[in-house]
Length: 102
Image 1: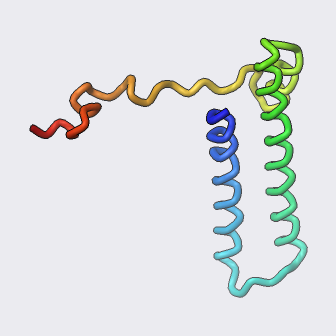
Image 2 (image 1 turned 180 degrees about the vertical axis):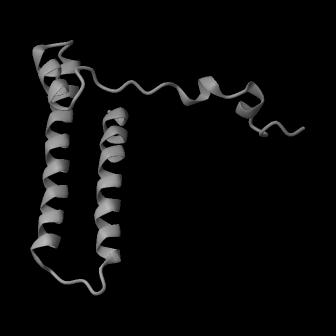
Image 3 (image 1 turned 30 degrees about the vertical axis):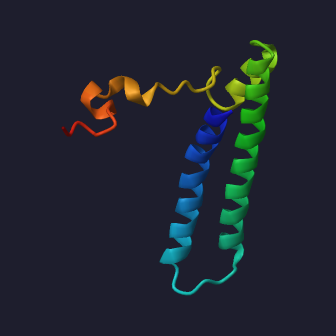
């Protein structure tokens, strides 16, 4: 389940950050149709991604059902993301408790 949260946040944070930057550029925050459209777009994209990512995880737990494949395709790729072990690429001296210091 941590992979699900990470993948969701990797999509949500850039969308929200972009929307906030758009608001910051404006001189004075006014609620007009463009602002509302931007907020609704972000909300719908987050909801779409969240629903289909949860369905994909559910399909994975059911051991590779059609649900996983269909949800994955609707997210743009038929397989859920696989995140490599971050420690695998680090030199062994960086993995020690003292950070390589003696």
